[in-house]
Length: 166
Image (cartoon, rainbow, N blue to C red):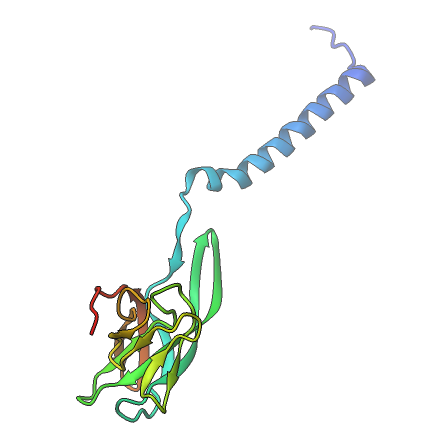
């Protein structure tokens, strides 16, 4: 039989420290591995959003509808407040406009007295169907994709509008 040499205190501490460093490295590697191998999602909204009950809308009377939307940015998913100008068309269809002016993204409002959307920042004006009536806006208002399920209004992504002027 072979004689075994007892391990010295220095050898034991060296092996213990090496084992501890290896365990910490493995723990950090396991946590970091998904970030290196799984690609991050692109920033943006996720699919369709339930914007709530379809309000009783009078034809051609815009309503500023507030709702919550899920937003993805890399590995971070959050819920953000959003809004849309919702209009019932005379034929019964629903149009939902993005709340950002197509000039510089300012928030516009509906003027009951002038029967048009107005951007207070730079003077752009839009008809109830989103067409540009005046001002520096280069194109009509952008619209959300819209679908109705029962009495619920679902909004998709914002679709940029074509450049049309009145």
